[in-house]
Length: 211
Ligand code: GLU
Image 1 (cartoon, helix red, strand yellow):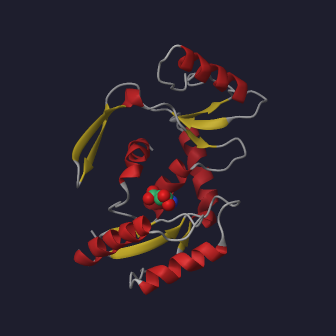
Image 2 (image 1 turned 90 degrees about the vertical axis):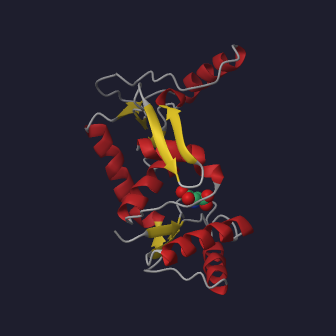
Image 3 (image 1 turned 120 degrees about the horizontal axis):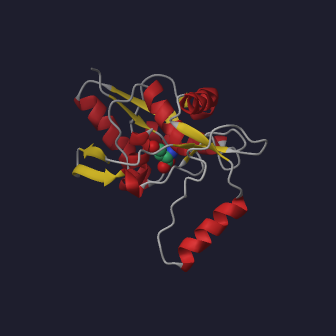
C-alpha cells in the first residue's frame, strides 16, 4: 500500500511555525516510504478564509522545499460529498436528526453547570422516529458500550470509552458539514493512510474514528 500523508491547513491565517513543522513531518514520512505528500486546503469557513492566505501558505511550503504531490485538494469543492455521506449515515440509522433548539441546549448546559457535572448532549432525539417540520442538525450515534482504540504511533495505544463522547453534530442546520465530518470524508476520498498532526487534534481523532 502506498503511504499517503496530507497537510491540511485552514487558510484563515498565514503558515506559522507549528504548521510548518506538521508539514515537514508529513513530507518526511511520505518520502521515507516512497509515498505521496498531499496538500488539502480546508477552506470551508467562507468568512475567515482568504485567497491571500492560501497563496502565502503555498509560497511558504515551496520556500521550505516541501513540495506536494498531485493538485491541491480544496475542501470546499467536496461539500456535496460531505452532505451526501451525512445523509447516508442517517439512512443507515447511524445518525439522526436532532431538533433541539438553542434554548433547549442552553438549558441542558446550564443544568450541568449548576450541578457541577460535565456537560454532554442528552441525546434527546436519538431514538425518535419520524420527521418534524422544524430546523434540525444531524448528529452521529456514538455507540453506548465499548471503547475506541487509537494506536497512536508516538503515544502508543490509547483507549477511550464511548461514554466520554456525546452524539456530536456532523451536519449543521444550514446543511453545511462540520469540520469533523469533512475531514473524515476527505481523508477517505484522498486515500490518506497516515494522519500526522498536532497533539491538539487528539480529542478530534476519537470522534473521527467513530465516523
Ligand atoms: N485544518 C485543520 C487545522 O488547520 C487541520 C485538520 C486536520 O489535520 O485534521 O488545524
